[in-house]
Image (cartoon, rainbow, N blue to C red):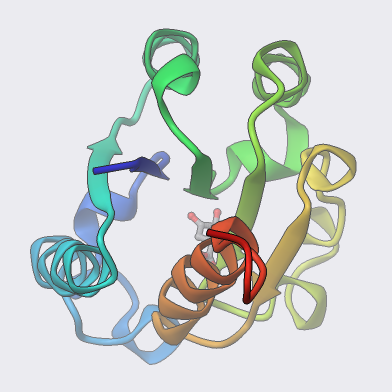
Length: 150
Ligand code: DQA
């Protein structure tokens, strides 16, 4: 089955416990299980990865991008300043979709800048965890061959 990567950055291991009024009550395990199931039903393998370490995320992208059709990434705060992560996405040339659970543009000033944005084909921001499902759907629709192309 074609593979899609799912990367969650720093502090997203605390999903469900951390500021639930901002990030909701779904845990990362629950979210990943839902997304793995939805991907599987559409004929895709979803490979999840979470790390609190920038370099580990970059290593994962380097290692896995070659065998994947797309990347869903919530970089957490790294999205506001990690040019190294931005460059990793550019270097491997993967179709990337950026997700932020909260509406970063309506929050503190430092969250307004999104440095991965120009390397991402699409963003889903402020939709809660639904944004990940939308990202998955978007990647799958994009990868699907046009009708009549068999
Ligand atoms: C976040 C927004 C970031 O500003 C924050 O640092 C996170 C989570 C979100 O999903 O809304 O860790 O990426």
